[in-house]
Image 1 (cartoon, helix red, strand yellow):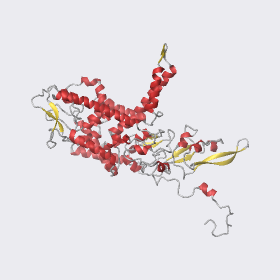
Image 2 (tube, rainbow, N blue to C red):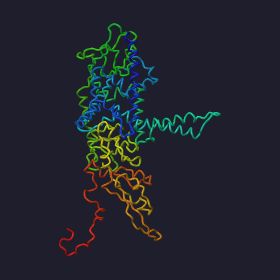
Image 3 (cartoon, rainbow, N blue to C red):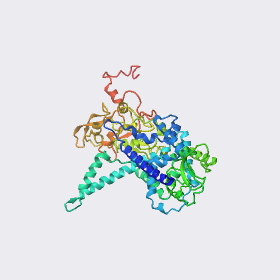
Image 4 (cartoon, one colour):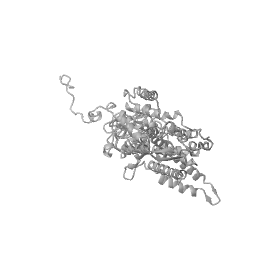
Length: 562
């Protein structure tokens, strides 16, 4: 079989693998919810476990190995043998870019040889160096650029909720308008489809996320850049691609040319999505090549083919010349970013943001930020939709990390999914009984808004919903005189700080929807000994209950009050 025909079969095999892996990704995305036994599928973290960039940078920031992430060494091994085949065959974000490139109308208009390698493709290596420099000093910002984090975060916050919103509202509009032609009703088609999606695909109420517009716009932007250059993100910005490129300097499988057959038609360069220069004799760039076989399939003369050879000799005269000064500049830029991120009082733990309520099991803030990939797995898994991506509550260093927003959703008392799905254990997987006792904040009453305190109206909704046993919210009867002089007894709620875990259900169910009369702050969180508003000892209301009934000692007693 000639190289062109064999490559044609390989190209279709690659496309099948890409489609299968992407469907697998969507399946794992859908599985990010509680099973009947309350657990999470161990497969959910699969793509992060095989990601050597996430595992390597996390090791640099924490100096700790996460055992499941050692699977990333398999990905490195494939790069040593097949080059950046992972980018061309497996990466689901790469599949999105490949599909966008394929659908682009500009694809047919490109001139042969007009899309060769340029020095700008070194930018992804400089980005990787900058991120690594940050990581050496404990700043984990890789999740902003990591392809798996980008894809999962974008699907969690924007794509999936957007598709669900469109499907549900379209079906609802059809249901109420009930268009029909004679005896045929459109609802006879839309309603079965809607019920199937509601029951089997979405399986939970529509999720909404703060900052979803920005996340979705950024995702759409990197996809639309494929209209300008094929696989723009993979060429210029992907740090995982840069890491695998460094591992592909001397792959065992490499592009070889047959002398005397090439007629310089440029078809191979036109079909190459990576600008790896397959048309240049002895100038092929293995650090850029995705091993997609497009170039071989495009050649009508069998002038090029991939073959297994010894890794000792260089595959071509093309070199990955990053330049010492440029690499040093990239490292210095990374350290400069580190300094800028850490200059604020909040970053140096001088003050604490009351709205920064981390999920139960979260490590102390600095350790948490050293591990968090900003991937959105915990937010997708949260059954109440309470976990939201941060904006600037944790500064730029903590952008898109999870924070509990009680008005959107509370922390389910019997749920520990966020810790189960976290790939780097930034949120530790606490056993359910331990999780129930983990304090993530403290409830605080606004007596100027609370009905029993401010308006002499009975209300015990917060107390009724408090999940702890005994309840952290309790009521004390108080006699009040109304405007007309009537004396009434009102039960006024209070918070026992020893029992309150900051789950946020009280804030979530408060009758005030604009600004709840009871709110959760980050004070008293278990993970931070410096953010403890409540000192140890017996609480005041218990002291009153246990106070002695004997009269106080006479003032002349020299030991009175000691």
